[in-house]
Image (cartoon, rainbow, N blue to C red; front, side, top):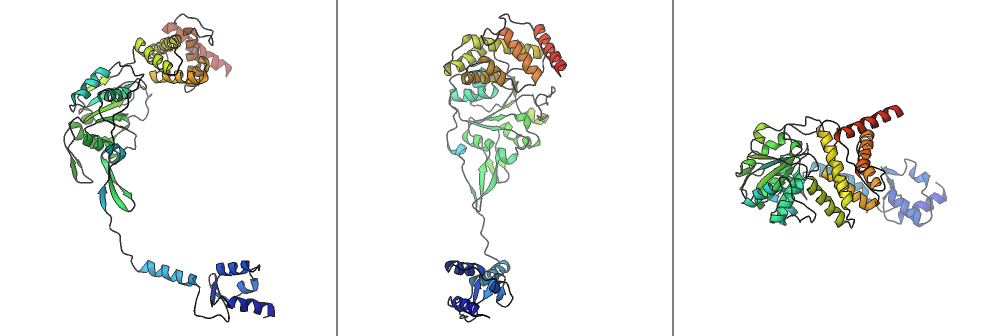
Amino acid sequence: MNKRHQAFLSDLAKLGKSVISRGDLMAYCEERGLTVPQWYTGGVEYRAGRGLYKVPGASAVESAPVQEEPVAAMVASVVPMPQRKLVMQSVETAVASESCVPAKYPNYIEFGSFPQIKKIIQSCQFFPVFVTGPSGNGKTMAVEQACAQLKREFVTISMTDETDEGDLLGNYVLIEGNMVWRDGAVTVAARKGAVLLIDEIDYGSKNLSCLQRVLEGKPFLLKKKNEVVVPAPGFNIIATANTKGQGSESGKYMFTNILNEAFLERFPITMEQPWAPKKIEAKILMGELSSLGLANANFANDLVNWANIVRKTYEDGGVEEVISTRRLVHIVKAYAIFQNVKEAMEKCLARFDSETRVSFLDLFEKVTSDPSFAGSEEEPTVVEVVDEIDRAAAESYESN
């Protein structure tokens, strides 16, 4: 050992540690502007363990703490630690503790099943209702706005193929080491005496069987909690769907299920929500346009006439797509953003395949008097619409 090595070890011994960790060694060298000596760390002469090194001449009173850590870990793995007892408790969600009366929508226009739905809710009787109709024709909003007008609390849940009994009735969840019970949407509504809307109920499947007792308006058991819930006065269930629970024959509403007959029998009545009449639909669009500062009666009427022609053509089997009231509102809002009818139409129809999109735009060109479209003001017949669609399809085929 040369003098330089001896000097390094002598200074290192002044730390008073007979064994030093690699981390402490690196810190020691860094403070003194030294590099970690390979002759010290690389051989077996000074090795005391993994990442540990002997310090000759130092007092053996203190040893590096890192030696003790693996031992403590080993002891901890052998000696059982005291187990914390899980505490079962209940917790209120924001939905359960706050008012759920929906806000009135200023542009809402009553039509279709709304008066009957409102009467049922106003009666405060338990009388489940199944509301069916095409997508985007105001089923959900009718229930919500009836509750808003009557100042009734409103709870909603949208069904998916993954919605289970825990989502509907409630379940235990682990929060900060405790098992906490949280009511599901059905139980929240039952305790509050609220109107429960089960949206897209035909997306549910076998999990819906847990609601059969609930749909009879009787007290029901939360079996995971062993508690019987007695629904408060005013509790009711309204379900909406695009089908009647028998699946989608057309295939337009994929992933909908055929619901159990015993389940469907628990709904006393089924209401079919129609498309809004032309005058009502025009009022809806005028309300939306006015709220955006773009009152344009001609545009609203053009959209309604166009949508009704498409719907008639769809019913006659001439097209495979339909224009909903919701889609018309989308177009109005796009028009408010882009300030151009044609651009708004093109962007809102882009969800359809190219042939359908082109034919729908061509049809609107025939209906509208808007300067951005060079169309005729004469309303086309259903036959003309079908011919227009066939022509667009032929042109698309030839271009390809």
